[in-house]
Image (tube, rainbow, N blue to C red; front, side):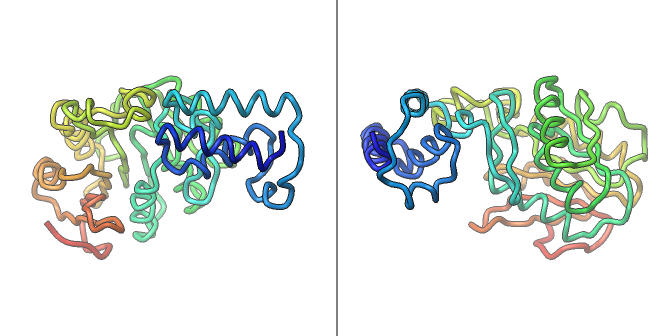
Length: 281
């Protein structure tokens, strides 16, 4: 079995089952099976696969056909130009979350305490620690998620302290400069309509935010107001159609909605001043 044939057969199998981007998926899975980059295939299409490589590739294809996301098969996902390790204990990072990181970076915050809530695999905390070259604190309710995040921090050389905790409970009043979070915000009513890769494989604890999707915001925002300094900043990723509801939960502070590339409000920023360009609400 050559690389060319393996990719053709894998693409056909995935396409027949309506797996998105079947050729790309086949390339990623084969690359994972033979431990090489996808570009290698174009220079060596006639290379014969070893038996162990074919066995691994076949197993990965079978897992993907059963709905397991590619990222949970390879146990890796890129975020902000860096590779992060994953397991089923954490959400798969989405590119939309990069906007939340960029929002904080544009502020160019002065030295102070920055806390990432619901860190998952640690993508936000680790990226901020590396880009700002300063320590970050992160919390997650899941012991397993904290373990994955710590591994990523060590691998990437990021100075992040991870706490297994519920939201902001470990922090004293007025002790934090910036609170940033991508909390669970999928409404429970949307569960049946989610893709099987999300519904059946990603952790429910990190997905669902109650009946309307705003339950975690309703708990987090009062805690953020308690721990933030008078000139503190609160930055939240929000789901589709949630900007009005979350804005009301934040209350009377100065707020900005920052849209993603599709024009959908994706980040809600509550600040003490006009720090970034966005639409005030």
